[in-house]
Image (cartoon, rainbow, N blue to C red; front, side, top):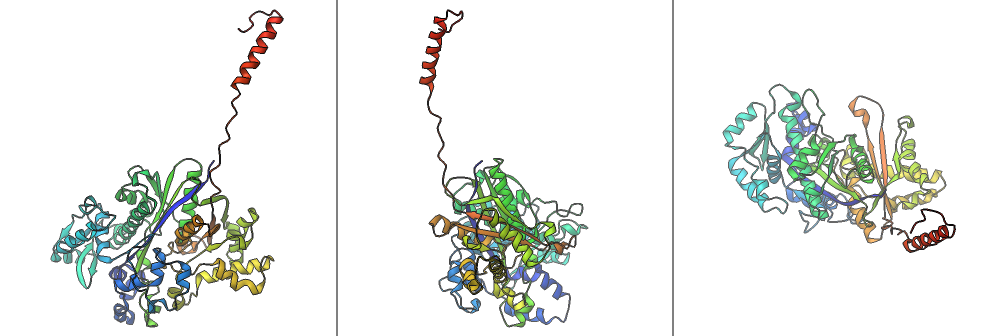
Length: 514
């Protein structure tokens, strides 16, 4: 069987400062306290769209600068914005909030998103000028009302949608009594769906394939859609594919907290390698609940609220074309149930066990991509530089194994690590943000292999105390194998047949072939 390859990847961000205030869990909890100093101060720390676009990690995420270039920019990055930064990048874009409300509306098939009439007309015009949306898409935006009607819905529990301080719409509940279909949950789910649609549309642009070529979609965000009888029943995958135009595809959702995308990519590769499907899109939208998650610490330290963007990505896994990087399914790293949660045990299972199976050393992997959270977000909250902590553990085990000298650890980390640049959206930072970058480097010949590492906190669901980890190696394609043609032996057979016939005649046997 042929290998599965990664044919392309897309990455999108959506700047949603107002949605951060009404959907982010931290802000919702703080609003329950009438005397919250954080709520009094937080709006003064919200970024403008231009500031979010110029933020160096965001430009790295959409492909306008490389992780190496980001590392060379002086921190704090929010004080060193990029000049001439662009909304669009090689892999995707950073969408403004007003257009995203329009995207939520056109992604909504149950009339739950209501936009104010004048605002809706303006957003339609903006989306019509967007390279990825057509008049047919924009014509889906039909549920409009005046401001008074929208206010009435909000009084009845709808989630408000504001832009530049003005009320421009709302998200209604989908059921009177079902909490799984409340306005808050529907706003979360529609934000996930819409940002995933944006990522999938960009994947078509990046790869050049048509939506109809996708056979299967695996959605791997951290949201779960359903009703009171099956709260996580799904299916985001088909809902996203429907809006993105993937009429030939089916699909399903896969969950694993932060490790979900890596599980999904391995599953996609297995389906392709087995010949079940030819092209599988792995896609995820953002997590609205995690907007402003560390906001209290950012505001307390006088920083901007950096967690004001929804993340999204899409990766195309295809049949082997002899060119694109392969996913090595013969050496998947897994953190087994019995391994324990000690950091060394985790890294041994998901990094070194798969390397040992291939007789590779730590230095044979050009880049490791574990949890790639932006340290400028996590350090003020006391979580430190998460990517660097992972690299230190990988390097320390290499020293213990005799593959590296202790004094070489820092140079190993700098050479084989990737600076964190992804938003803290849970599943978004866990390995996948570098796939587009790694693929380009492998195709250019400057890289041979990288290890994509997903790690998940399963204990958050209160079903188990277990931790999760899984990895795969992304490697240079060995090239198309030449088919060995069977030699043409028909003339030899014909000659042998004649000789045998003559032999039988000399013996005078009946029925000798003529």
